[in-house]
Amino acid sequence: MKLDITKGIQRKGYDVAFELVDSWTEDRWNGDAIAYTAPVTLSGTYMLADETVIVRGTARAEITSPCARCLKPAVTIVEAEVEEAFFRDIDGTLEVEEDQYKYSGHMLQLDDAVRSALLLELPSRIFCRADCKGLCSHCGKDLNINECSCQKDLTHRNPFSALASLLNEDEEV
Ligand SMILES: [Zn+2]
Ligand SMILES: [Zn+2]
Image (cartoon, rainbow, N blue to C red; front, side):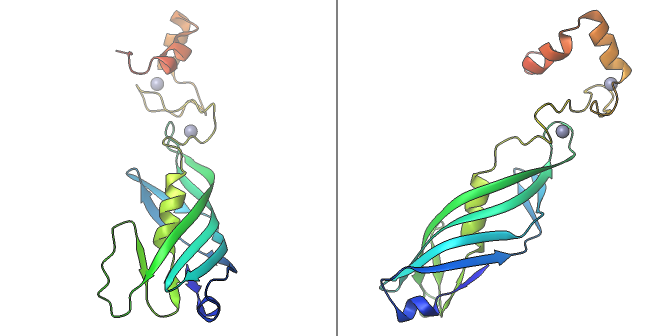
């Protein structure tokens, strides 16, 4: 995702509107393989304050990742505010902090800034649906499709045990 700042260089101090679309593929997040399953967009404005470029915009993406309960692909629409400064690196020797960005010429590479902002907005656990029943912890069957017999035994003993085990996952022995 690259931004051509030629217009802004010609009109320093003015906001210039832009809209970018890019196709990203796989990524890693929290140890999981995830994928961007729709084009990633960023729309906003940028401005040159002297030689530093201030970029402000809203990024949107559709991210598919494994459901935390059943591992089936779960789709999350993510929206994130991006506000970053890009420092001009004239001869390739500019030192910046790890979370700062630099550019040379008239192109900004926005991938890292947009990616960090989007991934920060992802919830820590993603489910394919709110009431996903997950996989049986004994036999590994997908309980959304079929109840397995281990589950039936539990339900037979106590109709609330399935719910109780969901609520007390940590205490379950
Ligand atoms: Zn699920
Ligand atoms: Zn089972």
